[in-house]
Amino acid sequence: MAKFVSLGLALLLSFLLATIFFAEARPTPNVAGQPICTIIHGVEQGETCTSIIAQRSNLDTPHFLQINPNINCEHIFVGQWVCVDGKVV
Image (tube, rainbow, N blue to C red; front, top):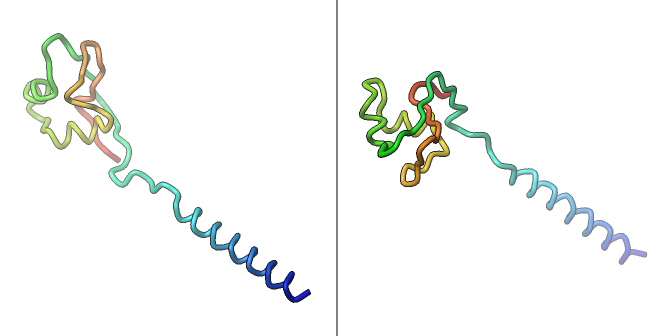
């Protein structure tokens, strides 16, 4: 009987530890926040991220990357929509 109680307590403790471990393993929210885009631009032939940024006096590279968090500047394509004005909230 004592063996079953010890086994039950060990299983219960293991379950509780696993629950705590996996509960703490949740992904954290995006620290930078969500981008809100106010002006979009359709990429045209020959444009790069750098040339798009250079066309806008109010846009720098860090801000461009913040408002376009999923952009891959090495592989932009004609017709791709990029945000050229906005904020991160």
